[in-house]
Amino acid sequence: MFTMAEIIIPNDLKESLEKIVKDSSEFSSVNDYATYILKQIAEKKLASQKQDEVYSKEDEAKIKERLQNLGYLD
Image (cartoon, rainbow, N blue to C red; front, top):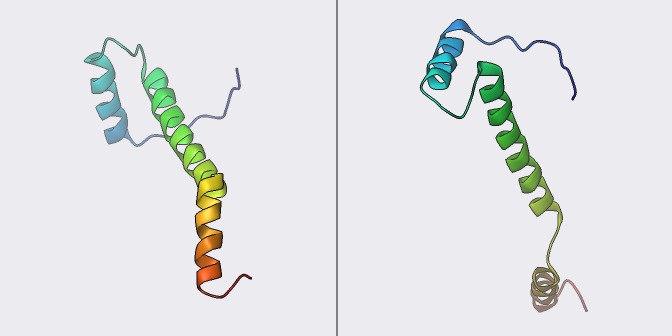
């Protein structure tokens, strides 16, 4: 497991997170909940980046056809 320097959370946010954890049966600490949230955000961001970078063969064919129709490709 990677250990990182402390993340500073404003008191009002910390109190909100503590309430969520207290009312939850899934998380035993603010750290567990924050880790869960950060993981969800990172996965969505990485998936979005991957989707932006890769075109399916079908998408690529449609793009080439459009460019040909517009006269940009022979």
